[in-house]
Structure formats: structure tokens, C-alpha cells
Length: 157
Image 1 (cartoon, rainbow, N blue to C red):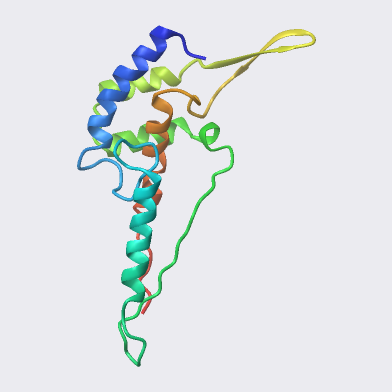
Image 2 (tube, rainbow, N blue to C red; image 1 turned 180 degrees about the horizontal axis):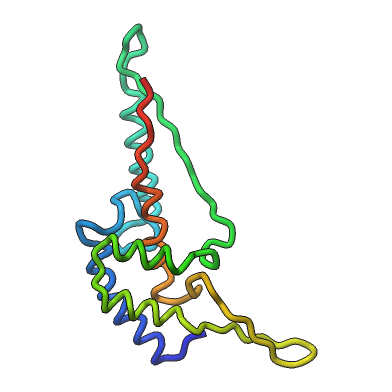
């Protein structure tokens, strides 16, 4: 859980980071999750539009009808599996300045999970993941997984 000062710092970092993730070298246009002005309805409408365009051609020999495939991902334990070095590398590729990447690297460092057991309090060093419920978590997640959305698939002939 983050305190009020931590949440305020996250909001400042997020505002600066969004200038890059929403810029020309930022997130793929096909990324809809966790973004302002983009909804599930927008994503569904885009999928339907692509599918309708693909099947609108004629079927006869050498026709223009195409195939359309939808691939979905459900990443198990998603936010907890985000590798910090991959996030920082993705931010660098998006042109995020070094000072901001250093702040985010510091944000990741020395993270500890504290929990209670029957024998008393225990701690565990956290070495990956983005904090769930945080302001930065979704932005950092999008940055790391953005490369998948930019993969070019082979053209079917």
C-alpha cells in the first residue's frame, strides 16, 4: 500500500511518463488497455472493422476475400511478472529521458513485501512486478508489453 506522498509522487511521474508513452515513439495504436480516451468498446469496434474489411471481398477464383485471425493473450499473474529491466529497456526505446528512467529504477529498488505469519512478521524482497493498484503500474505494464503489439506477422499468400 502506498501512502499519500507516494501516490502524489507516482502521479507526477505518470504525468511526465505519459508525454512519452502517448507520443510518436510511444505505445502502439492498437493498445487500448489502461489508456485515456480508449475503451473496450473502441477495441471491439476496431476488431469488427478489420474483420468486416477482410471478408468483404468476392470468393471466386483469385477473389479479394481475406482471412482474419484474432489472437488474445491472458498473461498469468501479469502485473507480478513484469521484469524491471524489460520495462526500463522499453522506456528507453520510447525516448524516455535518463532522469525519468533513473527515478523509475529507484522506484523499483529495495521493494519489500511484509506479511504476518503465526511466528510473527516476515519479509520478502520483491524483484519484479509493478505495484497493483498504483498509478504507475498500468503505464509501466503497457510500456513493457507494447513490443508484442508491434510484431509483424508474415503475410499469407
